[in-house]
Length: 490
Ligand code: ZN
Image (cartoon, rainbow, N blue to C red; front, side):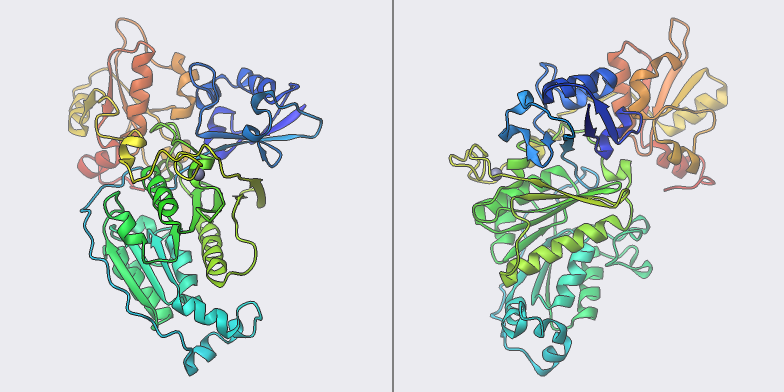
């Protein structure tokens, strides 16, 4: 028997098991045994043609099977197989708010340490690996944070405290109450303020000698190269796939190291990409998952302290790169599981066939990343919809309706539409028998928190032959806003 470690996003399809014992003499046989046990998993791991999907990486112990014998790789007793899907931390909702940004011309900084600096950084100065010379390097350094959210918060705080002289931040959001659980740059009094202003105030409160550049914009293919070119290290705190690939490609094209981090529920990943000779994000994941196959943090949740660990690792790597000390996290993917409190490390190799950092790159300029990630407006066909007002009047009239809630049980506990039936999206394929079927079956109205997951459910049900299925526009949040404000939002 061989054990397969199942990552959090796929545990919905293994009955919540994180380790599954399988039989087989090769990786291919072991995966076949796994999908024989858990049929719902098949579509997430394999294409219709039976090929492993390109955004799913399979490791045997700490080696990527692409560099062994792929699915023919033989297994020996005690081997561990890991499935490492790409995850984005957050909702895939990045929208452009204007491509042109004013790039601040950084004045030459004086790097001589002041008497205050000697006091402030004394614990650095007595470290031989930092010392006066290292502290001067930090003072001269310029780091760009993509996002002032969960990962950008701890990264920004520690970079500011460490004396990185110039910190740029790209963000266009306002602080929301639901951010405070993890985005520790911002406080309760900042709710409603621009994240950039809140972050700038906080960083300058820690270290008034900093220069903080704020860029109130979405990162786009038009502005990324201009924004990145004056910085030494980019810290990727992105929350969606299009921006993640954009950050990666811009870093590779400019030769800027990318301190990468990503989080989902209880698990995080970190690495350093685009370091000379090292791999990039596309070497690990050549393509993003199709929209909807991997849940986002807004759907899946995230343990608030998790980005604290991963963002701090990103700051650590940025500081080491600036100082030129230690072993950077290049060619290694660090995996952190807060639930079991385990760190693991997988080997990453630069892929000579990588489309952006390979020997014969095909991506030599920034592209349209929404299109690349399949979330261009026309990519997903619309589904039949209904509104909360319409649902309310049908309920009041006593129409026969089946209200299907596809959220998770813990969300159902917070708020629910009266009379609804809970079947989480991940369980839907094997629980179809619980839905009304037949000629006189009532209409099915599907809802989730905001309408994303339920749209997927409507598509799945339509494919299975259900005809009278509608998606509730805006989900239960809209129901609470417009129909029943006595319930609790989350
Ligand atoms: Zn690459």
